[in-house]
Image 1 (tube, chains in turn purple, brown):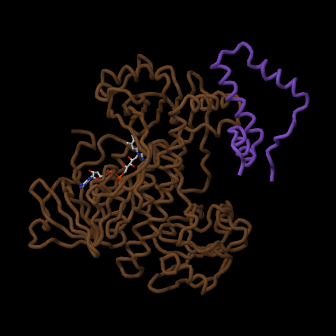
Image 2 (cartoon, chains in turn red, yellow; image 1 turned 90 degrees about the vertical axis):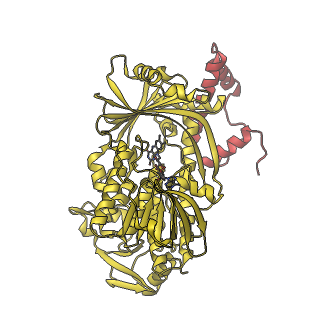
Image 3 (cartoon, rainbow over the protein chains, first blue to last red; image 1 turned 135 degrees about the horizontal axis):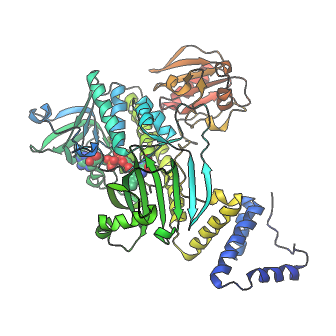
Length: 66
Length: 537
Ligand SMILES: Cc1cc2nc3c(=O)[nH]c(=O)nc-3n(C[C@H](O)[C@H](O)[C@H](O)COP(=O)(O)OP(=O)(O)OC[C@H]3O[C@@H](n4cnc5c(N)ncnc54)[C@H](O)[C@@H]3O)c2cc1C
């Protein structure tokens, strides 16, 4: 059974974070929100595994898992 | 008077019951001559059960309302003698297009599976549907079937007793009293029977108004379902265009909550909306305009002693997904054979509890699906709109997002997993789609099809397996239908009923739902399955 990864898993985290900010650069709040929403959907589809997605939703809500 | 829905099809006529010295007792009284009440009455009359339909009106549905009918209800209607006529008159469609803002974001094809007698969907005005059913009632009467329809007979009061229901009926010539062994309440979403019995109808109200305009227009739009999210001609809202026979087009505009309903319904306000959508030069005539709001709700129980609710009186869904009439017909299909066995003393009343189990399961599935569609079409928060729009934007570019677009999940029949009438699945390698609790999928048999051969009785379907031609178990007769995979060179029968298995024996209920299946005949086990399917185990 797949488990949501909650330990560091991205190479060069600073690079990734800068790229994330750069993608939002120059966008107003509405456009940025829309981009984030699209990003969530794209990443969710990539993960696919329903259990991992449920764990991720709970983790993002900062809820303790049961 | 030229529209069918303006002509009294079952005008008031005085019945002998009105002059009887004491209330006349009928086997079954059906309240409501909408599609579901007519369906129930035809089904019972075809089985020889005496039935009287009472309706407070004398015409078919005013304006169209339901337009979209799915395969399973068409198969049911075929058994009731109206399915083919509906398909002949109806418009078949497979392609849907989804627009967002000004762009076509994607199109889908329902790609109906081959080897079914009936199409995935047809569009047909509800008034034609009801007219054909009234014609069928007349046909049955001509054949001597015990069925009667009484127009302008409004049920004013009911008294529920242990073994019958007392009914007070208002007519243009004054009231009279009747009795029924059983009453089926098909009196619609605002059911007065429900109110008379003080029963709840709980669920969720959606704070939104929809404008329906059925227009008559010569147009060369293709026969497709077009759905718009946030179009320029109806900003922030949705719209739908769908074709019906006779050049009638269904147009549906979401209007929002805070509107003046009377004002919006006026032709001088409707016509500019339509022109903004169809173009200034569009030539059309309004056939029917209405504004509706909707709720998703159901009764806690559908059976209350001798009173049984079916159709909109029992459950109501949003129109997205075409689940109202479609699911109501599955209610009566489920109910009538059970009631017949109870009336004939071949099963006990407890069999009717399975109607509650199975049709509440169906209603909950429909409510869930139509609630989800509604939440997508009319987002209730800023974030749900943001996510909805993200899905639509992505769907234009990437295939992955298309299954998330929800402009109505079209009606499919419920599989009654866990029903008390099912026997455990004993066919190793058998296809999931025909497991116990599932409605039988159709399959081609040369020039014919499987479902009409099942008919409306208990059948033992054997595929490359031996079994007796007739089994009788405690009053229930089961006739064998012996087939071989060789009867269907397209291999659909094998794929739909055998899967990995080499042979199969299916016990099929009169509503064409699988009760049990195994690889070969076993007298004890099949008898146990018959008992179970009739509420005796
Ligand atoms: C805009 C719209 C679009 C829809 N589209 C679809 C669709 O595409 N597909 C689909 O499957 N469904 C659709 N539906 C739903 C469908 O119209 C209903 O589910 C269907 O009409 C329900 O049938 P019914 O027989 O249960 O009730 P109704 O059709 O409401 O009939 C009830 C009958 O009972 C009678 N009655 C009421 N009270 C009494 C009384 N006291 N005494 C005697 N008679 C009484 C009424 O006169 C009426 O004839 C749509 C609905 C709407 C509003």
